[in-house]
Image 1 (cartoon, rainbow, N blue to C red):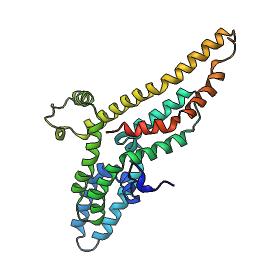
Image 2: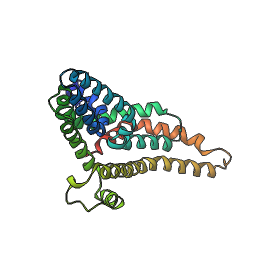
Image 3: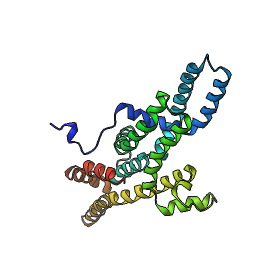
Image 4: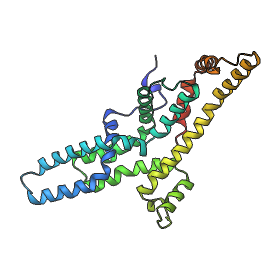
Length: 257
C-alpha cells in the first residue's frame, strides 16, 4: 500500500487550497482597503469588526466571480487543459473523455503543480491577512510575489519583450519594472506555445497509425471503408499498452519549472 509520505509531491493542505481562490481577490484589495478606511473613519469605535466581516464577504463574492478567469490566466491550468484536449482529438474521440472529466483532471494537476506557490501565499499573505496582522496593501504585495515568481519561470523573454512592445511601455531594467498587465499575457502566450509543442509530440504516433491503416486499406482495395473505423481501436489499444495516461501526466507536471 502506498503511503502519503512516499509520494514524490506534497499535497496542499485544505487551508492552502482555499488560498488559490483568494488569489482572485488581490486585484480588489486596494479598492476594498479604501472602503474599509472610509468606514473606519466614520464609525471608529462601533462597527470596525462588522465592517471587517462584511469586507471579507465582499472579497469572497468577488473571488467566485473571477475564479474561472484566474485559473486560466495565472496558473498551470491553461497548458494542462489544452494538452488533454489535443490528446482527445489525436485519438479521434471528440466527446470522450467528457469535458467535465478533463476539467476535473486538469484542476487536480493544477493543484499539484501550484502547491508550493499556494503554500507560500497561504503562509505569507492569506493567514496573516485573515488574522488581521497585516493590511490590504501588505497582503496584496506578499500574495502576488510567489505567483509572479511562478509566472516568470514559465515565461519566455521573447514573449515578455513582445508584451512590453505592444503596451508601448518603457523598456524595463529588471523584472520588478514589469507590471502584471504585461506579465500575465506574456505568461499565457508562453503557456500556449508550450502546450502546442507537447500536443504536437502527442499527435505524431496517432498520425502514424492513421497513415499506416489508410495505406493498408488502399492496398487491400478497401477504399470504401473509413480508416477511422480500424484506426480508432488500434490507437486506443496502443495508448493502453504503453500506459499513456501515466506518461502524459508525468510529462505535463514535469514540464513546469
